Length: 336
Image (cartoon, rainbow, N blue to C red):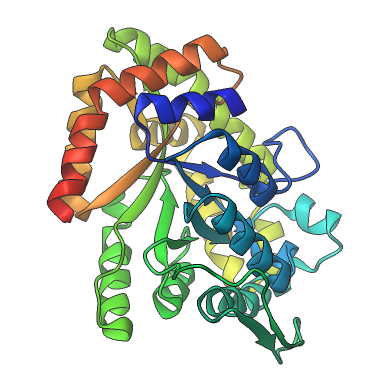
């Protein structure tokens, strides 16, 4: 995994997003800030993004300190990504009541965002009472424009706009179903901060091959295999779990109903179609269609999943960088 990231910089990729997960083989990275510090020493240009720090499982003061340290060691390449977390088993492992997750996130995220701007961390909230302390080393520059929140529920978009965070989302359903949320977030961001929000970041599982039929076959096997692991890890079909947790997780209880009503086959097909598979021309067309629908966005491709061999992972990365990357970089220049 590390060597694939190192190679990605040479291929022309701009940014790496690293997850935070615990206790199972679902995705093995318990501290993405520590992981990115090593990557910083092995790269020169690559932006280093936490995708995401799961805020309720971390102390906000330590998050500010570690992100500031990463930013110093990488010469300003750190990108902040925050999330709330969804897996009950991980909340249980950290001895936390999942029903408190939204309150914990809101309280701590504000402290983190403010701390990275001001160089001081303080709070008098319910969960994180913190005497005012100064961060050392001091932040070297603003994180505005390089701070994000994972937004997979309506209230997450609202909080991201409130805190001045860019929105990052995983491709799970047709973007027609979320375009209104995206537009509402952008308008909310503008009204609160009198500036444009960063482009939405979409995270996509990628199956690319010169032969479109081979790309589709691998996608149908591996992308759907990954979906099955998601459903298991997050207990996505267990409505009672999310309903009992209550609060802002009610959205996921409703989603469980919708997925069951849809049926397994249709659900898998929908997830496959939401992500990126095909030959390079097909993938370019899919991304262009998405841009036409939701406006300017950036995409983060996931190439290593479901035990795909690493030679295949790197071949896919190289093809994407060479055949799709120039179009994406052209978009970036247009936005600027």
